[in-house]
Length: 106
Image 1 (tube, one colour):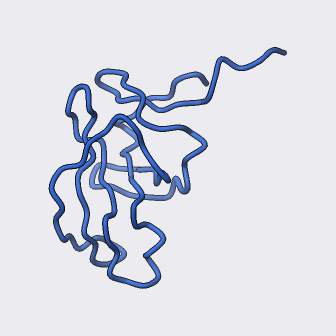
Image 2 (cartoon, helix red, strand yellow):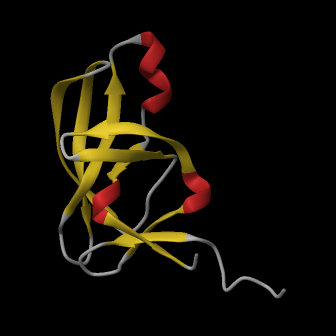
């Protein structure tokens, strides 16, 4: 019927700051401590906390928390370094927890 109003977006659940595009999702099969999470090629309007080495389900990583720039809520994490060769594809990518993002323009 007509043109869509723009790209499908994800926003911070607290303040509605736009943090990711639906087209940037690589995988919806990620798990966080609190449930489902999505892996994105890149996210926007966020800043990263300090890096820390963390043992996750698939191995050891250097990760940093991803915070909303507007309300400072932690929305997920970024993979800064993967130590397992098979997990290197995650480097530089971010995971956002599903319950902390809301759909816009759907």
